[in-house]
Image 1: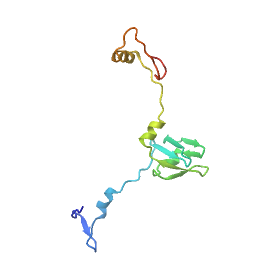
Image 2: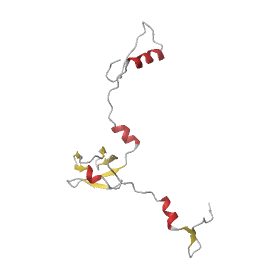
Image 3: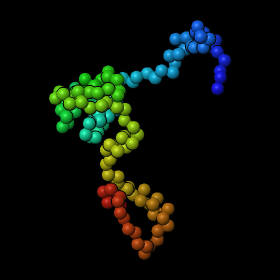
Image 4: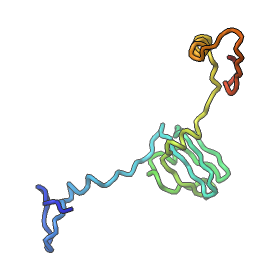
Amino acid sequence: MFHPPRDGASQTNGGETILDKREANWFQPKQPQTDYGDMVLLAAPDQKRYLIKLTPRQTLHTHLGSFAHDELVGKTLGTLISSQMGNEALMLEPSLSDLIRHIRRGTQIIYPKDAAHLVQRLNLRAGNRVVEAGTGSGAL
């Protein structure tokens, strides 16, 4: 599809239209750099993944060696990071799948007001049998 030149566009010797440099930079993605508090994913060559929150004066200890959080801050995502042993890992932005897979989950207790809501919604009556399975701590 042909688009006519916009204001600020210039012509080359061959007659092609190009944007001047100010307008051409808008579509170039900025390389995100890490900062304290960011979640980053370190991907090892053996397919192991480590999801960490960058914290001052903290170190991640792995089979590849140690990765100091302070050394990861300010680096561009997508770069290879070396441990103190010389092994490398790729520092990436975690996907939603990575965040869900690595999230810590505690047990969920069903409190009396929640249990009452369940009983009402299930239309339970005296004499009905209820099978409880997978309710965390089993406190129902």
